[in-house]
Structure formats: C-alpha cells, structure tokens
Image (cartoon, rainbow over all chains, first blue to last red):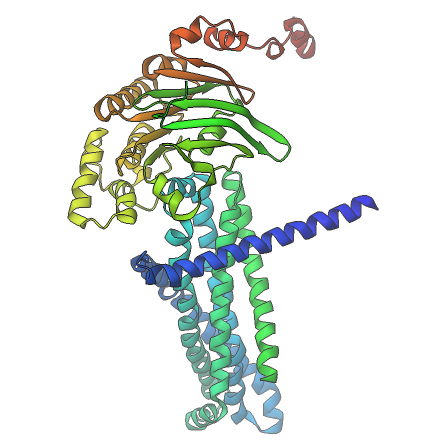
Length: 263
Length: 265
C-alpha cells in the first residue's frame, strides 16, 4: 500500500515538475519572441522564415492531398443518408461546415505534428546528445532564443496558413464527388456552400489551428530537451512527441469546441 | 596559492547528483597564462568539475570566482557577459551540425557583436587559419575528420578572444600524431596569446607536454596539485599508481578461477 502511494506521489511530482518546466519554456519563448526584439536583442527572422517553409510550404502537398480525399469521403458518406430524403444539395453545407469548424484544422494539425513536431524533437534531441545545446549555453547564446523562438513563430503562423488551404481543398474534394459521383449541380453546390458558411465557422477553425500550432511546437521542443542517453533517447522522445502532440491537439480541440458552443 | 590575480578561484566546491556527491570540498586556483590540467581516472569527477567551472552544472555549495566575481551567484545578462570571456572546446567539438565550419566560428560574433558581415568573415578566416584549418570554411562538420572538428571547436572557442579557454579531453579518440598536433596547438595558443587554459584529460603523454600545473582528482576530491615534477615525487598512493599506470588489485581476476569457469586447461 505504501508503495502504491509512493508511486502515485512520485508520478504527481514528476507531472508537476514537467508542468513547471513547460511553463518556464513558454514564458522564456514569449520573452525572446516579443520582449527581446523590442529591447534590441534581435530575433532570428531568417531562421524563422526557413522553418515556416519547412512546416508550412513543404507540408502543403500531403495536407492538400489528404484534405481533398477527406472532402470526397465526407460528401459520399453524407450522400448515403441525405439521398434517402432527396436532400443531396445539403452535402455542400455539411462538407463546408465540418471542414471549416473541425476536419481541416484537425487533419492539418495531426499531419504537421507527425511531420514537423517529431522533426523538432529529433533536431533538438540530437543537438542535446551532441552537446551542441551546452555549447550554445557556454557561448552565452540562449537556446530558447536561438532555437525555440524562431520555430515557435514559424509554427503558429504555418499551421493556420496550411489549415486555410486545407479548408478550401476539402470543400473542393466535396464538390468533386458531389458533382461527378452524386450528381449535384456545381451552381447549387457553390450556392449552398456560400450560404452555409458563417464568419464564426472560419473563426472557430482558425483560432483552433493557432493553438494546435502552439501545442505542436512546445511539445516538440520540450520532448527534445528531455532527450537523455544517445540515439535511443532521441527515438523514444520523438515517438513520445507525436503521441503527446496528437493527444494535446484533441484536448485543445475539445476545449475550443465546448467554448465556441456556448459563446 | 590563492592570489588576487587568479583567473579562477574554486572554494570548497561540492557538486552532487541527488544523494551522490561527485565533487567534495574541491579547492584550487588557476593563474593567468598557465595551462592548468585536471587529471583523473574515469569517474573521478573531472568532466563534472569542468562543466561546473563553465556554469553548466550548479554546485550544491562552494564558490567559483572568475576574475574575482562569484560566478555561481550570477544569472541572466551578468552571466552571459562573463561567458563571453570564456571559450570551451567540447570532447566531441559540439559544432552545430546544420551550420558550416565558418558559420560555427562566426556564431558567437554574430550573436554578441554588431560587426559588419565582411569583418566577421575576415575574423572567421583568421581564427580558422590560426588552428590550421584554412580552406575548409564551407565544409559541414560531418565532412571533417575528428582532429579537424576539434581544431574547428578551438577556433570557435577563440572567436570572442576569451580570457580563458577550457578543453574537455582534447586528445580523446584521436591517433597519436593528431593528438600530438592538438597538444602543440594548445601550447601555441597559450604562448602566443598568453591564454589561460584549463584542460581535462587522462592522457599522461599530453599532460607531460602541455601542463604548467596539474590537479589530480580522485573520487571527487583533490589528491594533489602542483607541477609534474612535484607530483612525480609525491608519496600519495593514488597519484603514484596513476603515474605508474598500475591497475587496481580488485580489477585483476584470478587466472585459476577464470580457467575453472571456462574449463580450459
């Protein structure tokens, strides 16, 4: 019994310690991102743009392809039910609203977490194993300024940007299967889509995607700094990074969905 | 031994990981312009000592004075200012793998100075020429040999013209010729720039060539400090054993027992 309480206590303390470390990381990143440039301490813009290209531009092909296919699938699945009521024209409404509010932000975030969150962990973890992080510290270069802040800015701008494109492509996917398979007219599909979307749908999706970006970046960075013990440690934390990111993405999604439900 | 001019003064330093005390009541000074070698066997705490000296590990108690200022009590910009006066060459060189050799050397200059890119370029070339690495500016660290990487690491450590430079196992993993070249480079840096150097090593051959003074660590405590001549004549059993390269009795297996295990007559 004592052992059980001991394990619970240790587990709680470890979680508390992790929460504290993440909080320190968050505050320090925000200082280097917002306060330091105002004080003339500089910001690595070039590095941030390079990271944006990596997280955003290079994620476009896979995100666009998956979004298109999901659009096709939702339209066909919707038709399965709506066809019975002769309501196939409402496929457009369903695709548009679910793409904007839920599926485009979620799919984009999960794909970027798998593609880039893991890469951030692997990069920082390998640097830690090779003492490159220590080298930065000894040179008087803050690793959060040098590594984290540029990545953070890139991620919180890349995820919403790619999400916006994913929303559009998902609607196009829905249109393709509605028009070519189900037989809905293009004009009706477009009219229904425009009529279905309200400002709040877009806002919901975009706000979520910004926070998905925050979660992906901080989990990736935190897991990277947690790496211990060589290549095996890098592998372990990289896997943990993807799992934690996806879990957090779902939690953030739930929180904002509930929030926007009442607001 | 302590004097006002000492670059580094270590006072009653204790470093521990949890309950495990790695360094216990360590005291020594490093004088300007000398090559001070920290010598010890595996697990003696020498790398921990070096990492504490550069501020990578926080001591449990004790003080480290850098030019008279208590390094252990500093944080933030004050600490960064002190670190600009230090250079460190890591065991594996720790060059940033994503940057070219020149960008690695230029990194501290770009981060800490507002020099023009053309000036940084010239300074980088000078530092690389200094360590015998002219012409490899555009190479990535992965394209260099182990010895070249360490030289590039020294060039980066020298970038900000430090007051003191720390070397972690400079000859580890290198062939004798390359290792001898690095020893010579350490001596050249010291004599050319009157650069204070702290070297952590267990290579006796290197120590004989580079050391002005040696601090021998044993089980986290200072077993002796002095010149090589002083230490060679000391009666401390561990130092005698270390210098004579004798194994511990417990490390030698009984040949008869080993044979009985393998059934070989």
